[in-house]
Image (cartoon, rainbow, N blue to C red; front, side):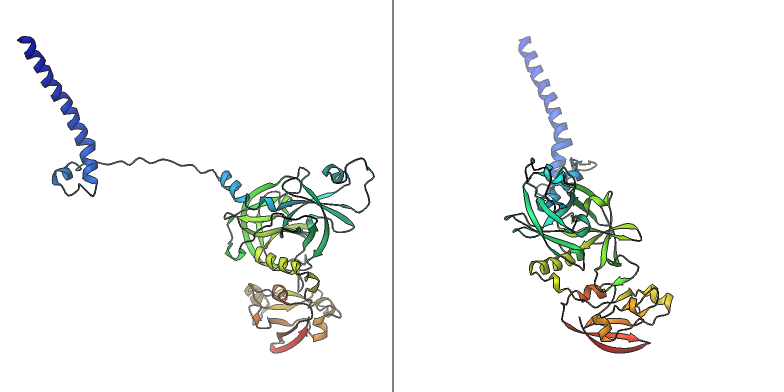
Length: 391
């Protein structure tokens, strides 16, 4: 009899203990959860269960490695990057080496430069400073390790971009983005392939600024036949990326890296992709020999320059020579000379296009072709006049 009572007592106590634990769990966790839900929140007794209770949601920390992102971005264009080998036209003395081997080409004192495929049938583009152009032969090493013979196709006198035609088909052509969307301070990636290892190299950096007045004539004065307005870049070892693309973080090519020498100093820059696309179109149509010529040197007028020099206009192109000689400002037997342009003239518009920071004279002129006739609006001694010129 006593044993039966003890068993009942233990059973009852067990119920109280486990029931108590269940109540605590329900009060602390179940009721607050139900009371916070939209389905059960209307019940008063469940609302009380959420009073003075803080619900903590568990979060997970996700780490994104920038290096991984860069690798994925550059994969979109990496297969379009090539190594251009320019070497003397003389036949190599060491005929024991295979003719198309990289070792043979390198043994001839070759120059390795970066290029990019612009059409699948073998049209390759680079910057003139990345290769040898005088008395040279060329080979193209593609991303898959194959080497192809190539010939110099054309040189764009306006931008310094060079086009070679490789004896190859089904190459991976590059895709160019809209450089107008790029702002100063934007993070970009440069890709180069100009080492004997024939492998791509990368650098992450910034677009430092857009310089609307940097003219590729390589002098203190602007030339009407040279591209004006480039991105200035913040990269280490810029010389390794000349001729190669600069890519934004959407994987779009926003420009091609180049180099000019000004006052015995190398200046590195990026030609905006919208300009590059226009040049590629001319190269494909074989029209680079039809680049327009005006034949003047000038100073692009900014608001600051106008204030410093007492000009009554804040934009335009001032025909100028540092020696103040007419023949050095307006070239002899040029379309400008034949049209009667003079040193000190300010060209304020070309056709219907006003000349300003966003529409440089040289870039506006490049929209035309050799032989076109254009009406210039010119200020001479403060008087506006119209001058017709055949470029």
